[in-house]
Length: 168
Image 1 (tube, rainbow, N blue to C red):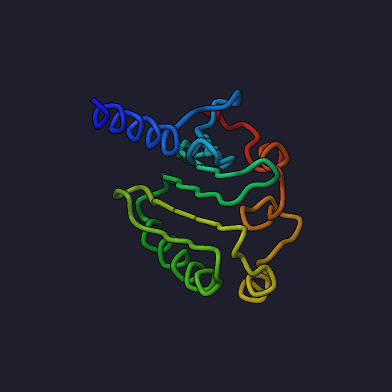
Image 2: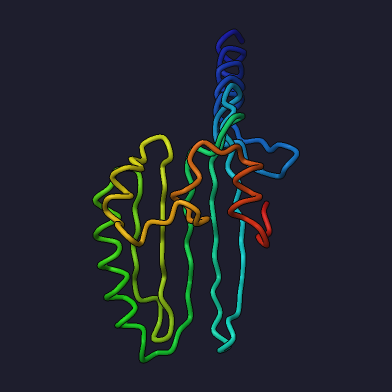
């Protein structure tokens, strides 16, 4: 009987320490009982003046004081004759950005008429000065790009980078 109670106690302890919960914003708690790290997934869809659709999913991880990381995955429809050219340009840009610790960018052909772009930023590791150096004239400190939001609270990040997104 003691072994059964011990087993149930251990199982309950593991569930409490590794379980997932959710807070009032609908985000998932990605840590255990004592973790304050949360993850929220936001989506956005836009159609340009030519009728091409861009669908984006942003996964944001944050704690009680700031956003820790963000991952954006976009499916971008375009003219099929421009897919290869766009990929070539994207890969050049990705090579420059990927040389910087804390940020990762990739582009790949999703279909004959669309590209998948993925950007991941770890704000704890991101070297802003190296990123600025790598991007040169393309770096814009006033831009709302993912790499310009280090140290923001989730609410500030949401206002600046997730306007028009649906989050859950």
